[in-house]
Length: 257
Image 1 (cartoon, rainbow, N blue to C red):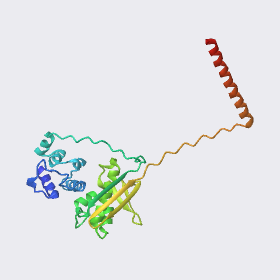
Image 2 (cartoon, one colour):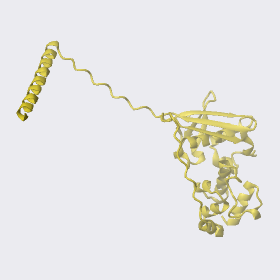
Image 3 (cartoon, rainbow, N blue to C red):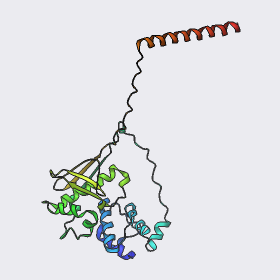
Image 4 (cartoon, rainbow, N blue to C red):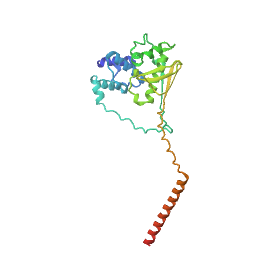
């Protein structure tokens, strides 16, 4: 992969003329968010065999070149001082300590392009599993189904930051016999609830993780019940001991006096 071939790829995805792309050209807005970066990721995998999760953090074209180690733009991006992000105080949500985490995502259906063969399209085959593609192509509006499943994966990432760098194909949306959706990672069911919906224009997903099981409470120690005679004897002994302590305290006080 050369800087020129990367520039052409970015130009095609952002619809910006290649000659107008410079090291300061912003990608976060031009690519249209994480979906655009996923398309860029898929293009780099298919065309050049390059896979680098750090490309999702590139704010400008120069930073992208720097991440991929390409040409003078990489050096220019490395030499330019990065502006420190303003510190943001963490927000504490009252009552959020129950272990439930929620992720939400919305996406335009038009962002999911129509393909002649979804199984061979570089974006779809690098983002969705064969089972997801098979499900979507059987629906009346495949792009809407793809958009909803994309939102589900994004919602899962937002609910669990530990999955932020997980490749898209390791996450899978499945449907049971009743059509209820759920999420899997590496073939393992993810504990939680998934809801998908879409209109003719947008798709929407909400994922709520299940709280971890509460640790078992220790069973209370059984009360020791003494026979009536022994209980009476024990009470007498305690009374006698209290009397002896009182006498000793009185004696010590009298001697000091």
